[in-house]
Length: 316
Image 1 (tube, rainbow, N blue to C red):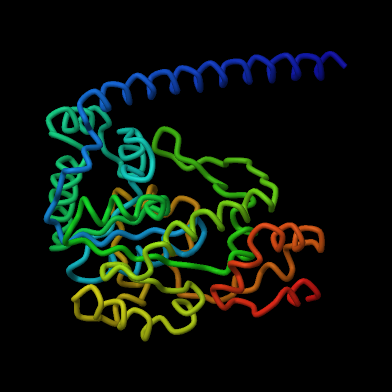
Image 2 (cartoon, one colour):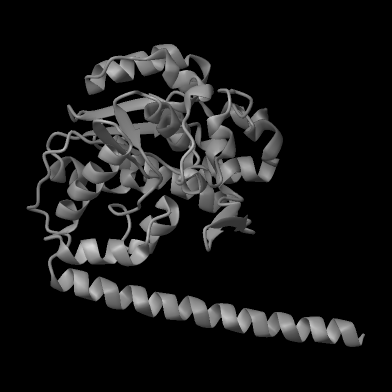
């Protein structure tokens, strides 16, 4: 009894401290954003001539797998996520994923005229450090700002990767399973409702589909990528103006570096042999009630994307 009371007391203290730390970080972030906005950091008239490849899509759609494949290309460099476009700019988002000194990023941001000036210099430097020639950015929330990205980078290309929303919802339910604290990967306990996951898939995927007719927009499906990677990547390379290399599908050609923690958090199997075992996982993972929830929110997009031709899948 006494031990239970002590455990409850310490858990309440721990929860209190966590809330205080979270509130402090939020105040710090709001203050930093205010200074950026005052500087016109998100200047829509800014331009970069980098021929950057920008990858986006709803989370858990295969963006990490595609990033690993592109990064194996002898000319292309695609590091960890940055979230510098789809979310308010926050140096810690970059430092913890890229294993870089946060103060240096803050200093470089202070020197830059705006976000795009910072991004141009950041990607140029990181690409050169990797011994590559062309940068790429893989961040799922890029899909929420496709218009801005295509405007800021007139020589850039946006790649939208799409996955069956039912499988995405199953994966998003407990994502992220891990987070980075002090440079280490630690568990992150999350359990979302399928309705929330379905809504996110609907919103994020629809945001990208709005640019389907743009000449610098390219779309591919996760299911096709894992089933026939050579064909899919060959077509993609033609679109981005690069020569296809078979090494792109060979996990043994992936190079380890000090950014592996950030690159592979929540996606350790992306460096392994390509597998299609997760296709159709919704058949086992979703209850009948959850299937109906998904159908009510995003069923019509499933039909529009040719994953199904009616709601008969609910009977499976």
